[in-house]
Length: 171
Image 1 (tube, rainbow, N blue to C red):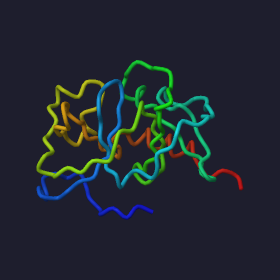
Image 2: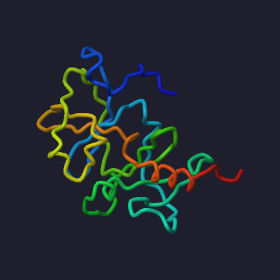
Image 3: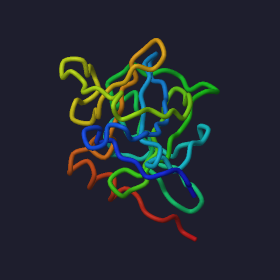
Image 4: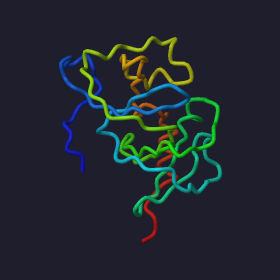
């Protein structure tokens, strides 16, 4: 269980609050996710493909008796697909009350940032990433880190579809 303090990405409420983020890479860009939403990070495993799913759904995995849909972040963001490498990871997250896995090119580190460092993202700068689920951006080293709120990543219809495709594995 995670013993980190509870934080949220509402950067306008408490500008002195420290926020912990997991940073990861996709296509030479760095993104951040709220650490409390991350349940675990695993190496790439065999994914069972499912028919009639959206193009960004890679399939499902069984993780300790739970069937978890796996989403390709590259496909979801409209990026060119690449072969998985030894650095490819699956980030298991709680998204809108459901466990989902997200494949990313690599996971970098857990970082702490002050809420005052988070700047709103310009709407024209979101590229393939939907502006509605960008929480903000921060300067991180030599580049900008885009903060994502994956609870807002899927429409209601997509959430229902993902929810209906999962369940507990037989015991």
